Image (cartoon, rainbow, N blue to C red):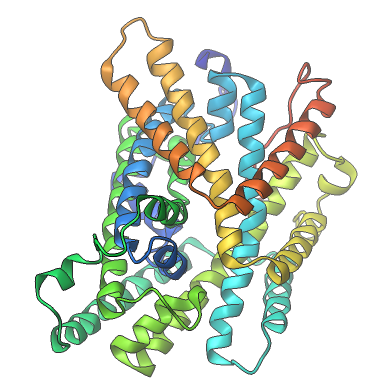
Length: 452
């Protein structure tokens, strides 16, 4: 079915293939951010009864299988790079639409997550200012910056990633000094973050792992660079796997260090638990450095996620999937989807004031895990069912990726699953209405590139 997706580009300029393997890996690490496990650390630890390192490692295994499926599907659809495209082309357009709708939930919830986190980090510096005031401030900041067409350049992103790397290195030194100066009960002290027989529960660990997936969100973005990558058939797959592996190793080290410093899973504020742990290890200055680093990183993510959601709505409006007069409109001076930026800002405002970080993160993972299951199913269909030669690896890898993601999806909390099912039901009903029972062209979830 891949032949039907080819697009003729004889008369159009082609993108320059300038990105090598390590360029792709660096891009993926920057998108995910080196501090990725720090914001959800507290809720992961509480949900897993202290086994946060174990949840990160289990999530890494799930993401590695899915990364292989993403990389292999990028070979088939080198210019698409989207889960809904893979599922729609390989299995059925209606299932591709459902996958796209689950991805849309991620885009809408990202600004909410960033609003909550920014407000919590800001309250650590100014606790006298109410959370609601900070939430309104940050939503207004994201919206005003995006309305004025301000974009974060690649060099700033590189600089932020390098700065985070330096902060993490300093943190490891501080933690090492703290841990080796404190009394402990021998080898079991160092192995307890992986397995504590007194608190271990498989159900609890899987519940924590369903949240730990948030640490890896963004690795799939590497597949969108297929047209700019050298030897994409090899490098996209390798880069996607390496990014997941390196993210998992670094995240495990960060979480392990935190659990050695603070073995308990009770914190003054679970949403900013990692900052509190850093303060215990290094004092007020380390508390301030980590808090400021996470605040700056989350502000950047908040701006980008709001614009990404606005562009998604614009793509759907441009394709007449939703009212084009509102969602498909572009503000002529700055060439931005102004209506959509304002709408996403309003959603972030309401969500930030009414939904906890834990619930928003679970809902985001609800959609992400559905999309990951879809990609694994698409890889299974293309590389195993449709091929004459039935290779065992083409069966095992996508099947395990699908099953692990499915188990983690089932391990989400019941409120998150109910809210997610409501969202998906609304999307399916809307898609059926727009396509007369899925008999005509489906909704387009493509996100247009930003204008130069």
